[in-house]
Structure formats: C-alpha cells, structure tokens
Length: 183
Image 1 (cartoon, rainbow, N blue to C red):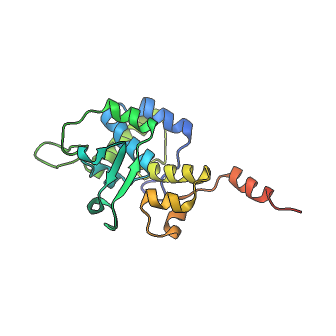
Image 2: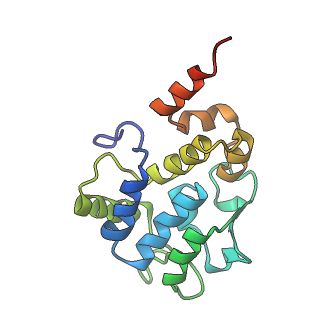
Image 3: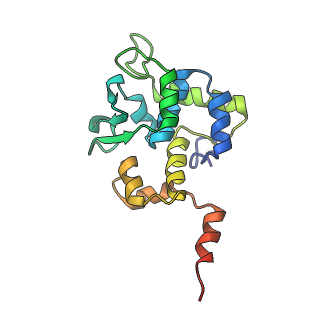
C-alpha cells in the first residue's frame, strides 16, 4: 500500500469504490476520469491524453502515441457501468479532460493526483493512488478468472511478468488453490 508516495497503490474493494464514486469524487468530470482508469485498466496518463473523438461506437481508443511503450493502439469496450458515468459528463470537443485554458491542453497528472487526494480525504481512504484503479481493475479481472492473455491485451502490458506484479492474490484465492490438491 502507498505510504508517502512509496509502495504500490492500494487495491480497492467494491465497497471502497462505491464510497469513492458516490461521496468522494464530487464532479462528473472527476468520476469520468477515474471510472475510465478503473473500467479500462488504463494508466492515468493514458486517460488524461484522451480526446472526445477517442470514444466512439461503444469503445475507448487508446492511441499508440499516448501509451507508455508507444507500441500499439488499444481498443477497450465500454461496459454499462462506465457508460452511465460517461453519460453524466459532457465535455466540449477536443481534450476529454481539458486543462486550464491557455496553460495546458489537458488536465495534468499532478492535478489528477490532487483531485484524488481530496476525494480520499472526504471519505477516509488511505493508501490510494491514481494507479490504484489500474491495479484494482487488473486484479478484479484476474480474480474473476479472466485469462492473463486477455488482461494483457486490455492493459497493454508487453509481457506477462510485468502484468503479474500488478495482481494481488487474496486469502480466498490461496485457499481455493490448495483446496484442489488431493487424491
């Protein structure tokens, strides 16, 4: 868990996510930003680089030029939970999360971090970082039995070793794993 910017961002439980999205994040823009990170497993920088034109036909397109390795474009389907949150947020054409007029084209990672810190303070969550949404999404997919190769395709990780460092193994998963041993 993150502590003074050290360690990994906390993986959020469904209850913590609900609390954060209903009481912590107070504007449609802020809910949309972090919902995209959660429901697509993207990095905060990838979400901030989105243009309104990157959302079309029920998908979000993460352009190769805005991804970490700049290796390939990813297309992620928008599921109903994300669609509801995006419907509340109606930005003008251009940057999906615009910055200050005349200063930055889009919201900065620093500002996104400040928004999240304030939201977490409102609801009493600690150890949460902007990367928590990515770690939470990937861990939820893994816990649901989604094959790692599919998760890798959504997350954009180049190799499975890097992806596996994101995934947290729960006590229930450990119990289930050893329960299949026997004769």
